Amino acid sequence: MATQNRPLSPHLQIYRWQISSVLSILHRITGIALAVGSLLLVYWIIAAAVGPEAFAQAQGLIGSILGRLLLFGWTYALFFHLANGIRHLFWDMGWGFELKTMSITGWTAVILALLLTLLAWGLGYWQMEGL
Image 1 (cartoon, rainbow, N blue to C red):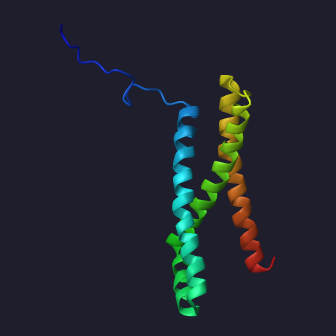
Image 2 (image 1 turned 90 degrees about the vertical axis):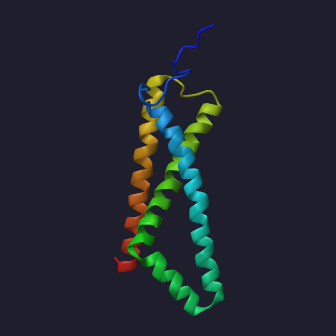
């Protein structure tokens, strides 16, 4: 019996990406990012408990450009994971499986997460500036 050299399933070179598959992967990535980001939060809390010098060092790290970028990404991950998780809850109830609905709710989760992230950071900035 001759063996044919063909892929057993579609591979990335010919597979057409869909919003549902991309958001499924993003949902998993944001879940991991939330777990890893929680370690940064734990570090910050432990530094506060250890004393002023450790807390100042933690604040320096978190307040740096890299730290703020990580916090911004963590905030987006939190809001996206929440919005997409709500979308999954509707799927668990059997709602929203039509292709058009899946696309609309997927983009809604992405945009809502971005808007909530910008709102949270904007409110935090205004709070710091005393506006």
